[in-house]
Image (cartoon, rainbow, N blue to C red):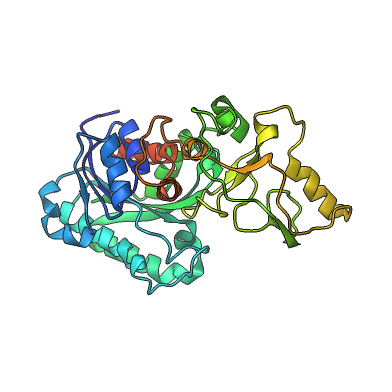
Length: 355
């Protein structure tokens, strides 16, 4: 991969996208993040990089000093568009996707990549916003389209679907979307199961895998039933069990308490032959188990920070700054590094082959 490609990173967070872009051979010349702990995390892992811990609006007037960078990328806050949030177009954070384009206008990169929640790319509710965004990109000279990607198809053990708006400057390619999709197809790579991914960490409570979330797991008295033991709501709080023989659901930024997903320790690392949750779910479905409010067996416990880091495909030795809650938030907010790497490679490949 050509290491001469350069990029500006926006809404950088802890640097998940940056790790992926760097793995693709791209040199990041500037990064910006408002959350102080995330900015410190980024700097701890990129000691030679330029990280500005500030509101992006304060940087726009001088950002043109990076004019000529090949790529601008980032993931503006998604709460205003998320089905897990209020879905409020007037949420101030929803306007940041256009602030992203303000930077593109100043830097004039060959390409840009903006990541956000899947809803922004597909829901009819957001069609006016999508059109406004694509029209603005077009006026700036970019052919742009949204691409929906599922992280599990690119080596990430997490069912995390996101939209990536990819824009190419002065692009007259009538088959732009077709070519981009073909490039993504070439990079598809089946993800390992959670067991395959995490097993080498070993049980929680060790130096290698400290037990970092002690929020209790309790049974719901009125469970919401689904066919799968890993869907529905059988436990209180929003943290759901993870299918150890499959993939995790999207790790939320709200991890750290009872919204943290959990695993069966003995089935993942021990000698248990079946996930405890499977048997409990079967009992509920058959009516042989009566739901009552009490604490779940000790073998069920929240995922650790080290496990969350692996699921998000950060390097094991990535340094995170902040208290446990802040660290879980940084991990959950990130774009999985392996997914970001694929996106970066696709953009670079397109620029080399078609521009």
